[in-house]
Length: 395
Ligand SMILES: *[C@@H]1O[C@H](CO)[C@@H](O)[C@H](O)[C@H]1NC(C)=O
Ligand SMILES: *[C@@H]1O[C@H](CO)[C@@H](O)[C@H](O)[C@H]1NC(C)=O
Ligand SMILES: *[C@@H]1O[C@H](CO)[C@@H](O)[C@H](O)[C@H]1NC(C)=O
Ligand SMILES: *[C@@H]1O[C@H](CO)[C@@H](O)[C@H](O)[C@H]1NC(C)=O
Image (cartoon, rainbow, N blue to C red):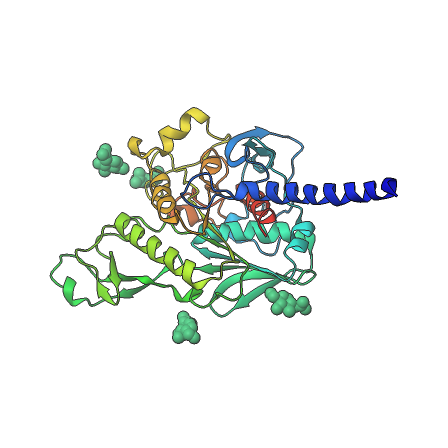
């Protein structure tokens, strides 16, 4: 009898302990490392997907080509015959302390079955979306373009009932052009203002709270004097009234991010997985976009060059990314929104922008080189591998 009971007893004892161990180990990474913002949950505590280095792997090939129907022409670098595309896509991101798996499109879609993923923000989030759609389409070639009032664009994956979309809201907060502003009539040279309501989300994502399971927010590269010069400045309003004293751009960014974070925390259920994508840096060399700045590079930057390019203390052309990140990181502390820090890995990749290959003959003369968005296929496919890994460990 005892010999019969013992194996049962052992099973009864061992199985639960195994479960307990599994249970607790799976919760271990949930213990925040600092009382600051919610740290992304990773396969192991030693793993930092956001830090690492790029290594050349000549066998590495992109998952899609120039024929993906979700491309935006200016980023379709293969079609636009950008030099070096094979090499651009041969670099592999090696995170510190672990490997980064490439996303398995069908497996990921299966995990997301009956779920929806939304991007909200500026064109760099749209750049991210296009990568996402073209990669996932490998897992469901029946993917269809998707459009709904208020949402700019996206795709529906019928095999898995998954929708992935982008809502364009460059400042996240609502803003509108106003020609006549009594309070400003005395100021020289002001043609009008862009009124920003710091406490009101832009219409494009005002009412999406019950649709998404995963959301990825961003804002950043519109917060510059090139978009909003002195003659047509941003003026910040709260509760419908101008904020006094008026705010400079960076202080406006702080107030807007703070208010949008509070709105997100209130408007979306706890179970919605929320990320805030940090800046991917620009790589204008020898001048800004409107000063013939260029990014005709064949190789990623060297580690020793990164601070020279991006540390705000060096006052370089591309200094704003780290500055904006600092504001955003600060505002995310103590919230349920996880920072998706794609900055460091993107800082290296001066070689991977569309540059002069924009698909239109006169585009460079009008807009300058594009050293801000990214070639597709390219670096955003690595962003996707990271995001997919974080989602996989968190849904
Ligand atoms: C598809 O997913 C949505 C949720 O996004 C769900 O409401 C709907 O019932 C699903 N449709 C099918 C056919 O499973
Ligand atoms: C969002 O929904 C609320 C409540 O239904 C409505 O009052 C508001 O006008 C909507 N906003 C937009 C931008 O659609
Ligand atoms: C940019 O290059 C063009 C052509 O070489 C030149 O005419 C123009 O002055 C340059 N602009 C600046 C801001 O350097
Ligand atoms: C930083 O560079 C800009 C030009 O890009 C210049 O106008 C400004 O004076 C510089 N600031 C400092 C502190 O050197």
